[in-house]
Image 1 (cartoon, rainbow, N blue to C red):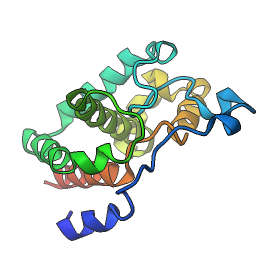
Image 2 (cartoon, rainbow, N blue to C red):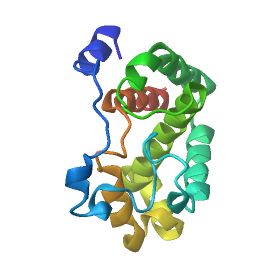
Image 3 (cartoon, rainbow, N blue to C red):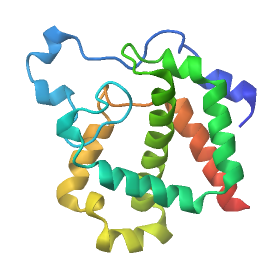
Length: 171
């Protein structure tokens, strides 16, 4: 992805774009705005009720890492380092910067692996049989959690990971 394209994707990200739902709106239904199964990004990071899925999340991240070249991963880390301030500015609540960067990196890998298993034909066949997270009873809950306002990572970051992943798979 060219630098100009990345800058276009970052348009408007000087201000917080991923924040908590205001308390007065949240009061109607806490569960409607809070992830129930999985945490993505810093706003619900390390919440106890969301840690039971962590081992599955780590497994997904490891599988993605196994299929990805060292060069591609280094490119992704470089991109995060380069755009760290832009990514940080997307959130109103933060954790330690080093921990934040690592969390963002691994959350992006998890999402890429989840989508690959669900939508890439070659991976879908194997995943459907033995993949706990893709079973119908869990899948709807994960999909719901992934679209929540408070449970996001910046789209330009996911798009960049996807571009690197596609480039890696075409080589």
